[in-house]
Image 1 (tube, rainbow, N blue to C red):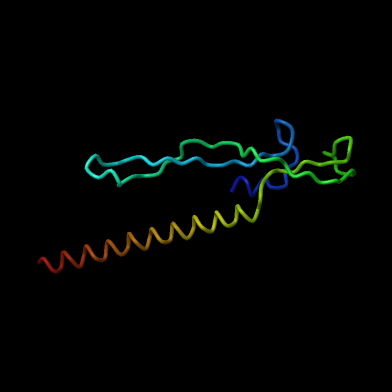
Image 2 (tube, helix red, strand yellow):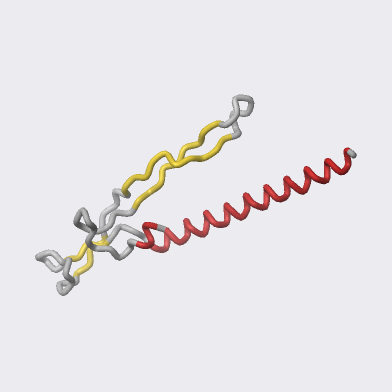
Amino acid sequence: ATNIANAQVTRTIEGGPYRAKDVVLKAIPISENDPYLKIVEVEKIVDDPSPFKEVYDPGHPDADERGIVKYPNVDIFTEMVELLSAEKAYQANLTVISTTKTLSLRLLDLLR
């Protein structure tokens, strides 16, 4: 969301355009008995090293002496696809949890 919100920011507090951020995740085992059972946590957030987009716009207040404005290295389309993919994965996980609950309740009913 931060990348999308700053996709057009040509001047940050530090100076220069906004640099896209990438999230680095890590899997952490939660059970010694089952090495495949893990949770995912954010390990760190890093700057995307890809180059800034350069646009010729000599009238822009952030243009350099050649009239080039550097825009953030944010690809809106990629960001939106990642956002939608995360939403679908979240929905799928909710469905799995709901199905597991339903099956567990049915099993308890059968055991009574």
